[in-house]
Image (cartoon, rainbow, N blue to C red; front, side):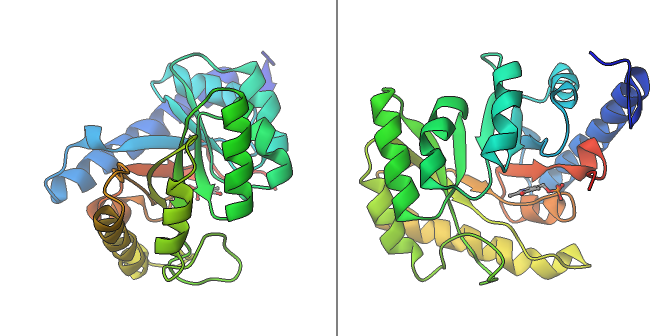
Length: 243
Ligand SMILES: *Cc1c(COP(=O)(O)O)cnc(C)c1O
């Protein structure tokens, strides 16, 4: 391992990660407590995009078991370098069907299912590997053109189609909320995702639908109050991303 990073010495980095993680975990616990939930119901996915795999190893040694990456090319070497059996890598970015094989080979979860074409490609490659992959359907709740995800209107039909793919196991829904200055402003987005999940439970009762992946550095406590079971947090753990 390198002696030092742009972020300081290894010891300084370790200390900062430990402090950041402790803060995030206590905010998760506080938000859960406010709405009568248990913190164990919430999985912390540490988003390691742009950070070297050494950061992932340190966070793993501090008890983080789930990591998120949004670019396949960037993620593959990290996953190849560090993938103990108790660590789950989550794909959280745009999926291209020509990378579906690599995604299936490397990642444990795919949170960003939003196109029928790439869902089919994932299903096909997972079948070839004899794998069944847990997936989340990404919903563009706020209808932002810059963001991925199917619209709430398209969701029921899309869910019905994906549910018919035998190698994909739909575990729930994922969303990326709009950037706002006050996290309270995106509470309705999180609430809508939860309501969409309730509707799908009725519509497709054979799928588990237990997960809602929502909430990032600027809004995860609000997402937890609204029912998030997975929060995807990068900057609050690893620091500001290098540009
Ligand atoms: C980068 C990213 C995150 C984490 O964002 P932070 O603001 O660093 O917490 C979460 N989800 C997705 C889809 C991302 O691309």
